[in-house]
Length: 181
Image (cartoon, rainbow, N blue to C red):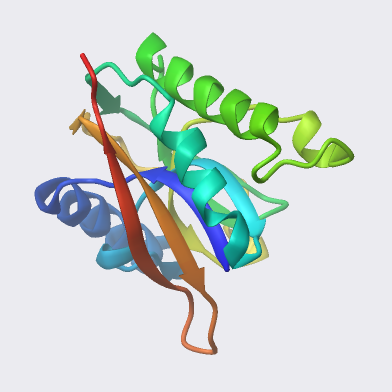
């Protein structure tokens, strides 16, 4: 199973981000992220054996999440990944705490991050939502439109299974972990 933890937007937030993605893809090229797959990854676990699922779920249930509102008020892009993203000028401390807590629980439980996983040991959380993939090389440097701030209420996080196909990734929400405070 290919797994990741994420913030999953409400339908209005997903629609608003999808609209921005479509507009930018028309303007810059590339492929807009589908409304149904818009999310903010908190921890990518990659391929995991099914027998690790109970340990992964237990690690996530031990994470404490305070409710917070995220303001997506910035667009940016990465030439090396050929993508456009939405992010925040200043990430709330509760978001950073959630991502760090989740990562620490997973690493400490060895549920998903093995001790020899050097790449994940260098982990750094950069909060962003991918809006457009496969931007053409000539789109860089990006001439980005102004970004109207979008408020995203965050009251839970989810575990998602990602299934890759020729049509793109299909996501299945496997479990939801609600705020505790």
